[in-house]
Amino acid sequence: MNGRTKIVAAVLCVLICALTLTGCSNNEKAIGTCCGYDVLYEELRFVTMTYKTLLDTEYGDGNAENGTIWDDAATAEQYRAELEEAVWSTLRSNYTTLVACYENLLTVEDLKSDVIQDAVDELYDSMITEDYGGDEKAFKEDLEASYMTENLFRFFLATDQMKNELYYVLTQDLATIVSDSGEFYDWLKDGNCVYVQHIFIGNDEGDDPAENLALAQEVQQSIANGSKTIDDYVGSAKYNEDTSNAAPYYLVRDLYDETLVEAGLQLENAGNVSPVISTENGYYVMVRMEDSNEKLLSNVPNLLYYYQWTKVGEYIDTFADDVSIELSDYGKSIDLLAIK
Figure 1 (cartoon, rainbow, N blue to C red):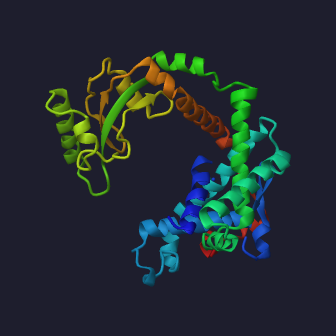
Figure 2: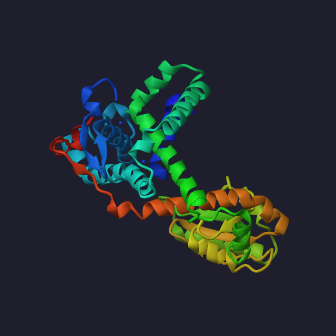
Figure 3: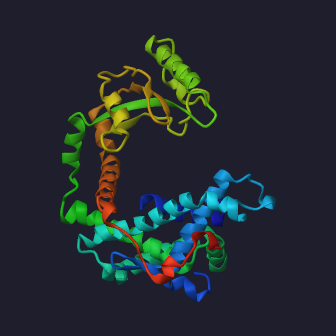
């Protein structure tokens, strides 16, 4: 993975968990406000150009010599609504996190505090050291090539650090999210997890769902009648599109799709195989695996950590409907299609 790709991956990670400058003075000009925070042009530009690239990848012909879907006014207009929805939704997401922080007495002063900014400096410097061998010039060139600026990158890192502070408030200070390992272990044992392995056959574009269903049924029947085991299938690209998940795992309520959790919990004994489980994306076949109290105990720390962060995300999402961006006259004058 090259440096530029690493930057885009790091920033897009911030954008999924939650989502401002070259040298132009307009970069730090506010286009509006959101819940007391200025929304800067640089942030709008980065998000817009990121989605323009993604949408061109999806809808364009893949030939750079032919230009992009945004080069022709008529073509660009076809995708305006999708672009605008993606951009404004993503912009609101960062401020949803900050509003959730504000509700727990973590304010803009905390965002600018030495504690947060020192953490940002450490992360920023470590990325230059670890991924660029200390070459800050190359790092900044990749930032610019990704429509990113140092100021914006630091803002994203600071927002992520605020989310970390919120995590500690909710799990430690207020204890509204479970933090005791013993309590969490008891909850897991009380019908809230099951040790399983699965195969997954996805309904990808161009696939025939009926053929995929037949393949899943073949797997299910072979395991159920004992002619094969789940291990015969998990490493096979033909039968399993989730080959990265080749080891048994704990399927935990609230961490996984409810349909999968409920299907797994129906398997009473090790070796039991589920019926084919139909989901929006494809078909699963699941087998309950041999488990022990010792094995579960050894997994509690990681499971608790992921569970806590899932709950933090759910908490932040409760504020989403209250977040809106109030555009200034300058913000209202900006056409996303014209941004380059």
